[in-house]
Length: 474
Image (cartoon, rainbow, N blue to C red; front, side, top):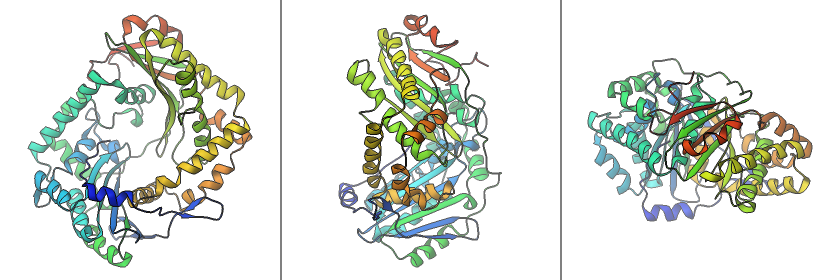
């Protein structure tokens, strides 16, 4: 996801001084402050939370659909549209749009995911009208100029090429999703590939905008120093007349879990390191067991003292870091393990990662490990919903996934409820075994090809190829 941030130091200082907005409950957890929800006549959903501790207002706008609306073979269309929303809108060209943000000391950024387009903004409360106007222009009146489109597309292609040349870690998730989810919408590159971006035209972007971006798909959360009735009137004036999107909202089915192993070897001749990604279908954002999954993953690969990092970095010195995590959407995304190692140590590192995954399944987690994980998560959660922007983002997340305040309010209770029995059940259902994995390796194929055949059938492609999936694979 791309994001442009134009922030002045004074604004950053105010953000840093913002107090914790979530209110502590009697059990040591946190609760969301009160908020209001309103649905406009055109279907747009507003969420308003007053918070008067600092003279700041933050806005999070989410439009359902995202990269799922990209035409086949033109992946990256939605991502380019998101970039162009910041490159001139309404009466302002690109320079004037950026100047309006910077002159107010504000911040505005846009990005896209598989299932949504988002714009976030934070301004001083006195400039809230400007913020609303800029976001309304970006969404409802983007200029979509040919010159800015050409520059954005060229930069997007160059950025992928640069990542291949410098640090493929930035792209290995793209290869992993393409390899695991091939044939499913989650396997398509959200930001596009070098090959698909080259086919996208400005007309494609305009068609995407007409088809998939409209008021009936808008979720708009505003948090900060304002009067809710006054803010509601302003937002209804700004967004209430926005047209509906023309095409049907894309939906996806749950992907099937992979049975067995398959290996993708992406050849980077001369590479001194091998980057690896091991994954399978994991869990959705609304999975009832999402909290216990996070408790287990914190122990397994979600923090510096995790099992994975301890084995692959601290004890063996095979890598500078190893981690795991869930990519959650409306349907289950990938659960993946990622790391990198010296070329000569490729199989040593992968073998150790697989053995650590086996140990998680075989031994489970003891009381001390679970207690440590619960404590860690309870300490990390409050700062994640502290600032106006974090709260606005959380509110749009709740509405998007159909969740209520209890997703936050009962978080501490859910974390504390995870015991050894629940953890073992969660491990068995949500974490893949070492025998069922999609494996992606980026490295010098000439040096590791024979060694990695033991992990399963190997398909090869070149890092220089212009797509993230091998042309010769089914």
